[in-house]
Length: 337
Image (cartoon, rainbow, N blue to C red):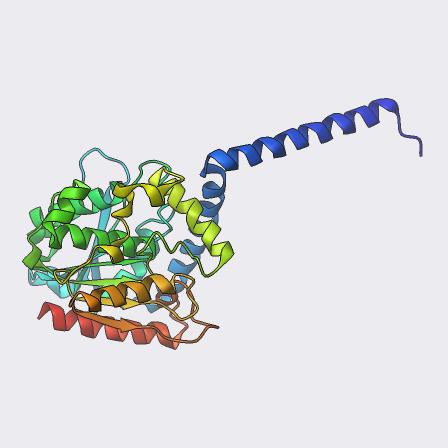
């Protein structure tokens, strides 16, 4: 078949355009984390929805809820959900309260991802709170920490209506949310650290009874150094979150490396990650740092190199997920009695 000149020329022009677009994209990737961060956010949001849907079958009856409470005035992305046993509403009870900050690598996710897990956790006799915050494409570090602090102030101001026991607060989180929760715990526990970060403690240190941390990233210098692919992933999301490609060289950003700043004043902590989690070194490093500083810490690292992996606590098909839930509830009850 004879191919005409115009067809060949059109093909050549198309190839040139594709090459130019590819070159432009590579140049953009060199100077901005946005293209890859957007792709990662789409994939992470899809996985978050699937995980949340899978947990729905395990939500027990008898849980009441107050959804989409606007904790920071006119700001977008600043809503929270509150869950509690129905008898708490019927009897006007204030219960020990677990304030959970969702994960998503600072660039994705929302409170809906953890809502079913918080409904399950509330069934054990707690008020549980899921906090939304601005993601990296709209606000940058340390905006989520500042917003989460505002959420704690809101909960204290509306404690009666929301069934919050303001004397028995636990900060919790998963993945990036665990890092945010741990950083906020430092703000509450350490006035000098809070001053350096420029975020005032929203509650008295005596009111923060404990922290519950799953699969978090607590040391920016690690950045997945054990796996090249994970290293590139974390570098991208941290660049997006901090706004700095050289984030390791910025002293203010270095404050996000919680494991490097904890001391004996850090609240009692329960730290967990699966043995196949690429972020496992972060959890192990945090436990080591807490023990070295004389802080109280409990740990649970189930499995082998083959599993379970990142965010295993939400996969309720796994025995390890139910075991860490049991251990978490026991820890919470001991620390909030």
